[in-house]
Image (cartoon, rainbow, N blue to C red; front, side, top):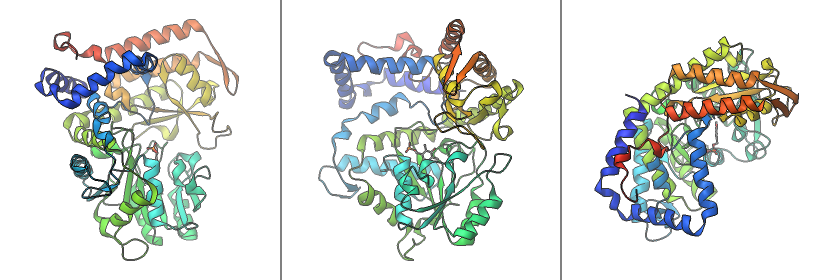
Length: 475
Ligand SMILES: *Cc1c(COP(=O)(O)O)cnc(C)c1O
């Protein structure tokens, strides 16, 4: 059974359930009603967004669709609670419910990932990474992370981020095959003896060998930070090796593959009691303090509740099914695109991501991205190893299958998606690095095909999928 049909059943029961009369549900209804009456301009924008998400083929590797229940929880009145600090140790009164919610989120995060420590307050994975770095390093200390142009993240030591300004950032890259160059990484570690080594990427289609990273970290006495922002869903589903007990600290975004609200999460496994750089303070204590009060103020209670909801959903068998489909789809998409003549970086994929070189069809990454967007297909430009174009132009495209799998599309539909991509890319002519020409008739045809494909594979946020008999008055 697919994620979609399971989710559909769960939703059908909740529609007929009397718990719908709760005060929070009433409040959401009143809120939307009053928004439509008093601010139709904004309401229309929000409606247009739902409609766009339902009818576009999103292959953004860093995105997923949050379940309607996750979105609803994110809009809860719990958001009105202002309470700095942690459960049982707040700096404001009135946080009883929030304490229970935050404890629930922490317990669910620990259970989902098999972790012993979790901090659910980080407002994003970027904040989480910066908090972890500030907990383990002093300004000027050395950090070793994957180069931005090789698929690393800004917070892994890029000069454009404080991680590359406050710390002495050294970066490793990829070998000729496009995989992490471990030989060079070992040399760099020995030469620079970093305080923190970061494993993880924003654009890397292969399995990350966390054990190998840990061995290198140990050889120079570094802490290992695993950033699983992109692959957290696969890790939770047991479809990518888990770094929880291998790294000292693991961070992730909650909105990417986890289908949660926008936010971050910090985890630790067996190393949570390991002393920090002072030789005394356990890592978990250092991280708690690094998030609050060192780098954040009040937590976002409704977001934390929405994280709790998403963690519960990610622990269900249906999530695992979707994760399995994400992998199958990425492999199928890579194979189809290769067969159509595209150079797929590293020759394939082990995760949700497929990176292609757009120069084969004579396009830059940005023109490919824009031509596709015009046709209702979303995928973002991406630098490729040895790229000669600047970051706003690039020579590659990053595709992801998270949302395609959430639409319950399988390998059969990947053939259709690859064909659509190819129709657009091969029908686009480059005018300059950032300009292109495409036949309006082709755009119209592809748009229609995309709309039809999406309609056949609706998202959980597509209200048209709810059986008419179940839509009650006011629901
Ligand atoms: C997206 C990403 C982040 C940042 O996540 P935000 O929650 O958007 O701040 C951090 N690390 C990696 C590897 C990412 O891909």
